[in-house]
Length: 514
Image: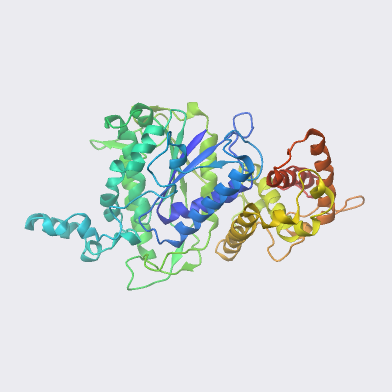
C-alpha cells in the first residue's frame, strides 16, 4: 500500500514527528487477519513558512529516517517487520524516468515566498471598487502580511494563496503517479491559518481532478480513498497584544471552520438541506480541553518551535487506523464518499500524567510492545554496544567492529535520530498533559518503563545488559547457520538481532506491556 500524506501547516509537521517514531519502532498497519502490511509513505509538507522550526525538525527526521531505512533494507517495499521497516519516500523518488522535482518532502510554494499578501493578489493594480472590496474582506495587517511566515492564523488569506495548489508541478506529478489502490491522508489544524484553509483546498482539487484534462488517471484520483485528521485546539500560547494570534480566537475560528466543513467538505448542504455525503471517506477529530504549557506567541518571524504534545502522538495513530480500514468500507462514487466514517479519540484513563497503560486497548495492542522494544534497543545501542564490540555475537560473521561505530549509518542513527528521539520524549514529559512512556533518568533496562514492571519472584531473572547480550549471542548463532546476514549486512544484523531478541525478552521479562 502507498499512502500520500499531506501535512498542512505547523500541526501537520508536528503530527509527523510521532508518526516517524512509530514507524522507527517497526509499527505497521494490520490487515483484517491481524498481520502487518507493507507500506510506503510519501509525506508532502504544505507550509509556506519554510523557516518554521517544527517544519525543519520534521524534515530532518524524515531525511535521517530515509537514510537509515535505505541502509537496512535498500529500496524494498515488501518489508513488514523490524525497526525502520516502513518505507518513506519523497514524491521525486516515486516518479518514473526521473523528475525535475527537487528531492525534498516540502511542497514548493515559490509563488508565495517573500510576497506580501497584497502583492500576491495584485492589490495595487485593482480598480478603486475592487480595492474597496478587498479592504472589506482583509484587514490592513492581513494585506501587509509577508506570507513566507505563514498565514498567521488567518484562513481567509490561506484560502486565497493556496489556490495555486492545483496548478503546481507537484500536484500534477502526484496526480499522474497516483494509482487506484493508493490512499490519501490530510493532517491539519482547524484553528490556525494554513491548516484550516489548506485541508479543504487539497481535498477539493483531488475530487475535482475529473475535470482536469492534464491528469491522465483523473477518474482514479476523483474516487480516491481519502482520510483526514482535523486537530481541534489543544495548545496554549502566551498573550501578546502585538501578535495577530490569540488563544481567545481559537474556539470561534474552530466553530466557523466546522460549520464550513459541515456544509462543503465532511458533509454537503444544498438548498438548505443536509445531504448524507462527504468528500472525505474517514474523518478524525482530535483535541484536548486541557491546554498545553503556554508556547511562545510567535506569528512566524522567530521560527515557531513548539514542544511535542500527546495530542500529536494520538494524531499519528489516526493515520495508522485509517490504513487498517478495509477497502470496501472506503468507497467513493463520483467524488462523494459512500457511508463516510467519523471518529474521535478517548483515553482509557483521564490523567494529567499518562503512561503507555493509560490508552485504550486497541492503541496498546497496536503500539506498546514495539515502542518498548525500540526504547530498549535505543538504551542498548547508546549505553552498551561499544562495550560489547569484540565479544559474543559481534564476532560472528559479518563482524560488528569498532570501525562500524564510525560509519555514516551509526552516526545518523545515534548522533542525529536518537538525539531527536530523546528530545521528543523529554518534550512530551514536560508538557501538559504530560506523557511519560519511559523513565528518562535511567539507563537500566529493568527501570526503563513507566508503569510496566519487570517480572519478579523465585527463578525470575531480571533484564539487564548481561542477559540481553546472552540472548543476542544465541540468536546470532542461529543466524550464522543460515547465513542470514550474508557477509556485509552489518547494520541490518545489529537492528534485526535487537528486534527479534527483544521481541522474546519483553514477553519473558516484563509483566504485560499491553
